[in-house]
Image (cartoon, rainbow, N blue to C red; front, side):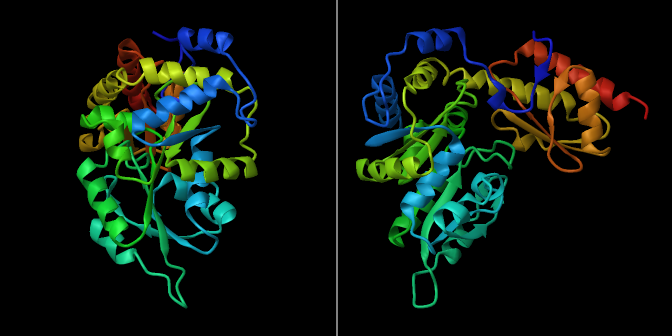
Length: 344
């Protein structure tokens, strides 16, 4: 049980005692000069785990996505991505500002892309059109409530893309959540993309960092782009050490976060003033709509030691993670009951 129940995001997790010990004991070097052994070990582990040739440790998922987009494209190229994608909504226009890419958006249903719309949106380069160079997918899908894109859909999109000469990047910020929830390995998903990134600093509990994976040639170019963006780090093995622990100890336990999210969702779904589609609760996220202003409900919950986020005038997001246990979930449900019964 925790004094404050923080459901704002899984980014609020704190490093475990084992991670802190690993940080203190990490062997380090200068990564820009290529001699930090702990970073090298993390990159090798990540590449092997995802079935890719090589990997690159980067400060954040946003940087990983933008490195991938810039490496795969030239200025003026067009990329396809979900209209609700993280790279579209939450990366400060990075594809345009950093890669000079034109973005075309497609729709999805509960996070699952519309295959026909993607196929119809792919355009060849002509005298007049830039041509589609890259498709960006996101799994799990944040704005769709942490929904999992089925592996079969990834296979169809990748086959379609390859037949049209288009590359695919997978924003797998929460890829291991998708793997645990679906029963498929992260490598199976990664096999359906030319590059894939995943976050260490969300459900895996690290204080910072993401990893970008792909072919050796792709990662060589990505390393140059990382340098361009100011992402070259020196004795960052103290951070990579946490990532090694995370890959060894934190993946399978994500199932606990998923169970807690389901208990939370079922506990608040029938409360007055709450609308919640239980079909969207597939991993560690719960999105609900509120009759009263979301900010008002969020403020009432904070008074009851529960933190969450308002995403829109009448929409709330709650995210379970390593630092939230079953007792916290029960307390959060009671806090919702109390907050919704409070008279204005």
